[in-house]
Image 1 (tube, rainbow, N blue to C red):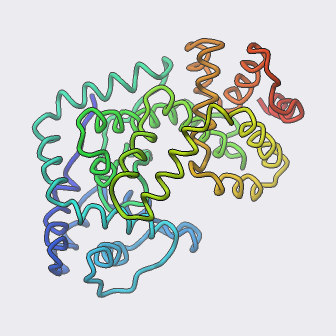
Image 2: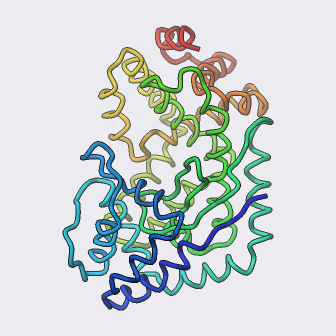
Image 3: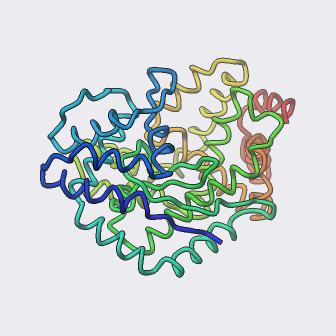
Length: 341
């Protein structure tokens, strides 16, 4: 049975409401958050990449919110992930009342919503996948959503960016729940600790879930219309890239397989640089197109069967290209993939 946990945002929202009015929040209100089980995963999500992934302290996370509200009193760590968290916090502050309405809506319709979320996620996973039993709604993270061993976490800013649309809200929650089911399939893969494994897994996971359920395109479509100008520009770049994917797909995926070869040879930086150059890092749209081709050529069952192995996903795309009579991506890279599968 899935639980949609709103305790963290309900505890945080009095602070958000005060900061939205540019009112300082007493330290004891922040200290009260230490009892929330979601705080640890949130602080870990906003970890400091520049300091070997150190989790934020509560005082540092507080400074993110106070900077977003324009009432900062403590130094802000200016790393990449803290900038993302700042954007999410700023959105929550600017839309505090609308998000409060959304929290109340979710509270009153929990049973119906959770059942639909589970149905969408499970019907798009192979048998043997085990989805998380809790989705925690949070705020002030560096992500739209993330999964760890304690469950799924979704930032309220993302649900707000979807226009508080009930259908899109459920779609995005199901998208994140699907990720937990996918992780349950690949976490015991014998090569999970190899440096190339997680980039492959991310490509597959985002590609397959966006093909089967959606979520990312819809989010960017809303961000292109609302929000800060820099967000609009990033969203429009994503949408332009997405809308031209069919025409450019085979060329783009050939480039992807080339850097996959570099990654397999130990050149992680080449793959990371390529991924960072994309408007959809780590290549969601590449993975989505690959999932689409596998599905249309080899069938839905074949696509779902790849979910337990990202390497198989890459090889099945190459096989699907051959079925279409199109040139397969780099045979050299495919041979490398076969050698590790």
